[in-house]
Length: 269
Ligand SMILES: [Zn+2]
Ligand SMILES: [Zn+2]
Image (cartoon, rainbow, N blue to C red; front, side, top):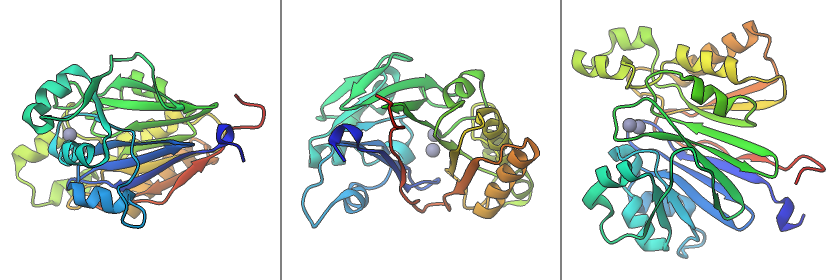
């Protein structure tokens, strides 16, 4: 296999309220989407044989601690550049002091090695939170965590994606009986909060385009969700819509997932 044909690979290192990081590889390009774990934990996950891991960049979706906590230390350790939009960088402030940072513009595609990256807005209570659409050689992965509701723009970016990494934060029934204080429950279920299993199911159905696709459910709440429940809720909605070609996985709260790999279609460039 030549470098040109090397696959797009994505692995959720950790997802949930205690920290979020996703590793993306394509040929010689290697970057993170968020680094919301301690630097030690990130380096342990992406390191090889005790050497300093190769890492080109850390893309930030937003400045919340569970997404940005380890970004500066990982960037310092690896030489990776931190990429974010201007309001996120401003909000992250001292957290990124002394680190090489670059800005991206909303909606404007940019190249990260061999991967084209486009950010798009998400409704969430941060400075200017975004999701990312990653494209390489006709293969597309869309990542959307931390969103209060499903928007048309999200569906436009997710429809037809080969991989859709999507938040399924809570089950409304479990949330109703959980011990979370009411102010926190109200924040989570609000339009600028987090996505429910039912919301994820709606987005999954709308993003299905009849081809084989994978939906990876992430950012599950340990108190208000269960991985099998999230998976079954989305699966049932897809089956009801006869979208049987979509594979559904749910990453357990505060755990990592397995590699997702897609090679370019024959003849794709
Ligand atoms: Zn957040
Ligand atoms: Zn989060």
